[in-house]
Image (cartoon, rainbow, N blue to C red):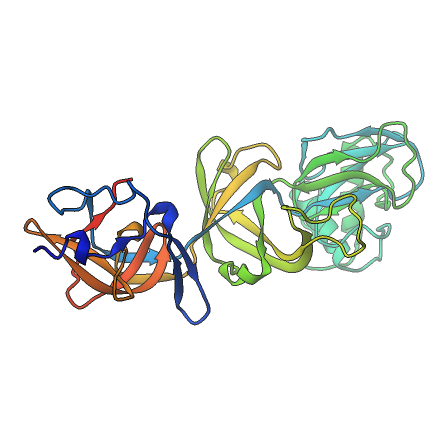
Length: 373
């Protein structure tokens, strides 16, 4: 009698019949229910309905999560002083160096590149990193030929360069830069939202625009318990709106914050005073290898595939090739020369629909039985 006959064979853990859960310490819990008629789809000759190869190669315990496509470094730009807002860049506009962000009382506020905010007027004799930033921008725009950009002193040469810049914009040639003349940001800016309308009096500290960087990024959240699946520098693949994909890497893994359970947590109103079922989440951001090639509307949904741990050169079989052996443990049904035999295996990593297996007589290229569902 063949060992492949049902009386002597284990039961396949097929599709919806099995949930494989990784638990601490490297073990696994496999939950099975009794098979229904039709689950096994036996052939009358005792052979499995289909086979799949035992493969040797790298296996990754990847994780797929849902996220959104966005832009980097969101911030709000506030008016530096009182006045009436007379013009703003439109939502979605990309503003580059020396471009206009908005106008107050008809006077433009222009974008310059730098990490230190414009916190004071700049004039002859001033020193600091903000002066260095100004000089670098004047040189980049062609007004500051010969300026020493490594020196943070506002020199006579800086004054002359500022006057050339002011002349080009038909502004009063004072040689000084008022606090309300420019706004520093780390690079080109995209207008995400107009926070004030033309005709408003924004006043000091009141947002005029919400801006971001122009490079695309993806963001997603992980349960805090799974935070170790995302490490800065890890490679990921992002499935984009429209069906394309792009590669990138994790740029930052943020702190945790309580989140309402989407399946019934607190929202706007419920009583009880105890709040909904909150879960700690970790915010993760992804930068793309070729951000200029990434297209799609802001805040559109994406799927992010985390590579996770990788095992090199291991044997693996499809998860649905696993058998629950009558005596306990797990095995696979090896098919050779028109015959079948059950081989007990030890389970390792699960990933991408496959499972790492080790067994005394298991070899690469063998065929193992799988249910044909």
